[in-house]
Length: 278
Figure 1 (cartoon, helix red, strand yellow):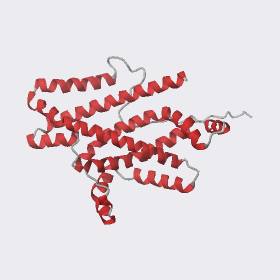
Figure 2 (figure 1 turned 135 degrees about the horizontal axis):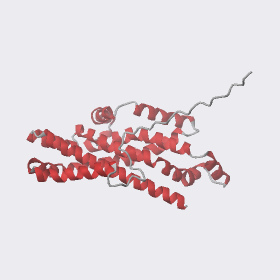
Figure 3 (figure 1 turned 30 degrees about the vertical axis):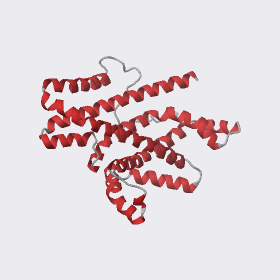
Figure 4 (figure 1 turned 180 degrees about the vertical axis):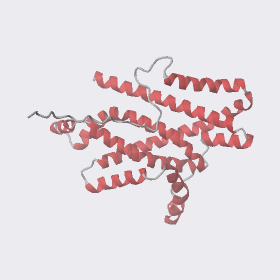
């Protein structure tokens, strides 16, 4: 009787999809690389438009300049607080203390299930009356920018929590066991051994989340925040030049997101070399 050979199942391919722009690969340094064409092409168009058609392009860019600053400030503040919230929630997700784990898990699941736009409306319109009823409005004032930062921090903190959790759990368990064997407490091992290694693992997804947050910051224009998109809308509503206004807005967003994607790639490469040298 012929012996049947055992067929090993073929592993399923892993597909990774991100909301952010593509982080350039290490070897993608050619002059005709996709990043170079997109980034320098967008800059060239922004420079050429006022030269080819002074009115209105020479007016749109200066008009939107302060909106660019507001967009960057709101995004940087939100990503900072999102990292803090994400780290705490991520540690809660792997905590052995059941109540902490439950609270962190509920936070992640609830926040990720509600669209950012709804969270922005809720914090800006629905939360102030509750604070007034509780007497907290004397201590905390939620205007447009603060509401935007709070909403985006809470929303992206949930996604950061999963990134931190996955990054910590991706490390070999022997790392923690070795640190404990050397006499460290779990908190010391986590702070000095686990988290520094986790940073190298999670930097690319955190970079993508930052870029996605930068793009989603355009939603804060509904809260009377004078960001880039709102300034573009204001110019378009007064001049009725919608095509020209939104073309500039789109190109500026493209330049910013591509710039930060390159910056993340450089940081990742530097951390990789630092880890190799150590």
